Image (cartoon, rainbow, N blue to C red; front, side, top):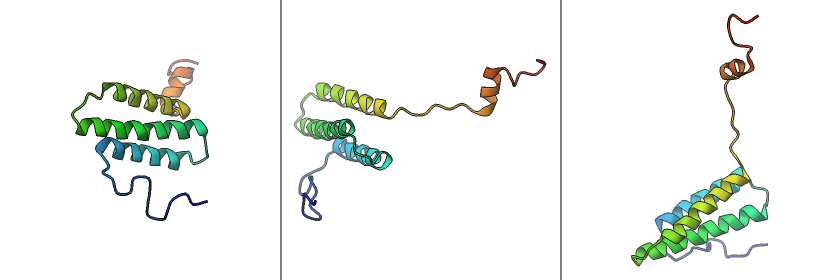
Length: 106
């Protein structure tokens, strides 16, 4: 089901500030990396968009943004918790930790 006219996204006809542009890149990355629908991820990504719009609007008006920035950072942290980065070590480090790569042990 198409919810908007082709070429008319939610941001058509209005200025996109630097924070919102950043949010759009983050959202696109998440949607590309993890395309399966996840309601939590979807909600956090929408919150990121909204916070970015608010931050840009407050910056244009010369207002204080620390509360929204704190929420922005918290939202990013929550997003990163949904898909933790895989930590890997190379084979040499693994062999030393396991004790199999230490010379002189037999």
